Image (cartoon, rainbow, N blue to C red; front, top):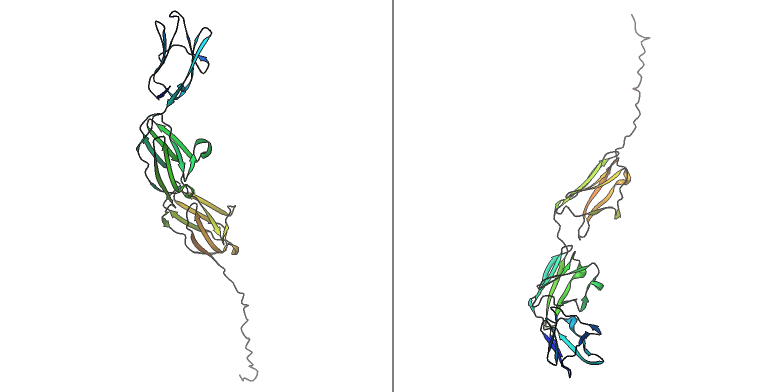
Length: 284
């Protein structure tokens, strides 16, 4: 016996003894009467009605009369679920949240998600993807998009499919104030400062391509959109090329630190020449 999901199923038997009682079993377990399972006894006919059958009603059924038994199988078919709202292409930047949404014809329907031919599910997708159901809406969520997420995404039902493309580009970061070259003397303070358009952007400082590490003399700060590198008590070895690199962006800000060395030369003071005046030949 086969029926579509949500339909009503009627199972019936005829007995030789109209007074006999019967038991109905599903996969070997006795069925108790309820709003879903309705028993009926008219004359020598016994019937079982299954209301609003679901996929869980797909089973083997048995009717017992004392030592006699009869069997049948019920197959519940899920009706074709169509896609009533298609996926839409998404164009975004790195780090943004992405949502792909389809709407299907039946609530509770199964929707399978795939990316570039590989199925996405809770077991294989890990924390990278989330799946949400809201009535007939099914949503695939990517929390923070990366370049690895670029590709073709599919939603499948047993009666339709939909596809969409995801494009992910690097973020554009506006430089509001770049770092400037500095010329400082020994023991003075050097401050490199820049300002970017996104206050949440972090970054790293480099000197001659080696990352700068904070110390008692060197301070690195990030307040709002402003990033600073402060060097106290500048010495000659601090001179070089300094670079700020925002995390997640293909750009760098560079400047030079020039060390101004003041040389003091010692010039000995020469005594003025002595002049001797001979007055012995002068008369009074």
